[in-house]
Length: 300
Image (cartoon, rainbow, N blue to C red):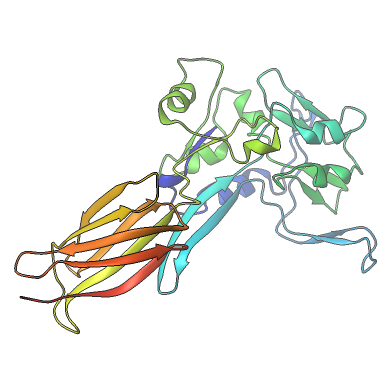
């Protein structure tokens, strides 16, 4: 799966459709399915692992087999929010499978990693085995559970529910081993990257457009102080680091400018110019995303 975070609007359709597909619904041989795909996902209730209130007990949140996260950058009142979804990464080297006993986790020929809902009963260690935190404990059935990429639908030639539910076409699913598939072409052309490759799990979920850890610099240009907004002023930012780099933009109808994709921990020169005004230059140390406030321009 390739997930284009730059397109995600945080609507949570992927989360809702996942719950619609799995909450209260078993996909087991006993229900007429060819294999045991998954037991029903519990609703959003919470549970414990261990004896209640003992020192070894920890709290388990409600299941989010598809989890939509919000990443904020900047500080109030100038904040940017970015969203991205995280399912199971269906790793080629899954640590959960190593931690499992009795064949409780297996990888299908198509690469989908499945927790067997019968063999995995009672194996609480599988929750901690996932470095991405994408395995949940069902305290009602004593089962570890996670995203299956809707394997029961894939085997019918269909997409996972989350893919079809996304209004922004954020999620692209398919056969990465087929170079002619849409997902393989997207991966090859986009430079998509997995989350936390340092984990060494070789995940099969890739991301486009994750901004973190990039920073931004914004501000408002006015005839100052306290004058009209300066529209169409040229704003140029130049890095003073050895790697260099120059960015340029113009102010909008409210005198606002925003330059994203910057490296924090560097010194920059900010230059603002507009016909009929003296050019304003200032040094900015970008320790993190920030707004420099009002930049006042004066006439000669």
